[in-house]
Length: 77
Image (cartoon, rainbow, N blue to C red; front, side):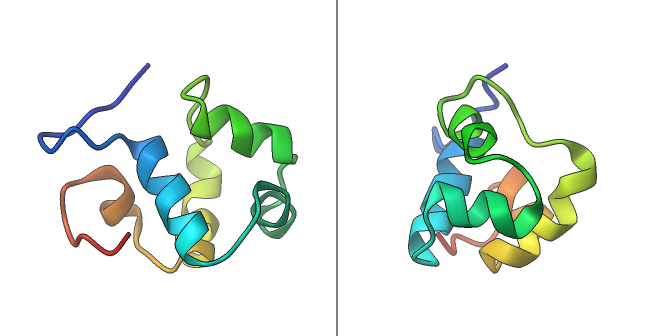
């Protein structure tokens, strides 16, 4: 279920990069958006993708937009 973009960057790579840019642990990100830290670890290991219902809060928490996570848009991470 790997979503790779033209630059070779995956959604999960972007999630990890934005999380680290914000200085957050997987645990802190999970607590903030209401998921277990193991869920965040699964995203970052490309085992799972975030639930669509979590995307708005995830993007807000990471300081980006949903479009930035899922496109080659603004390179903020």
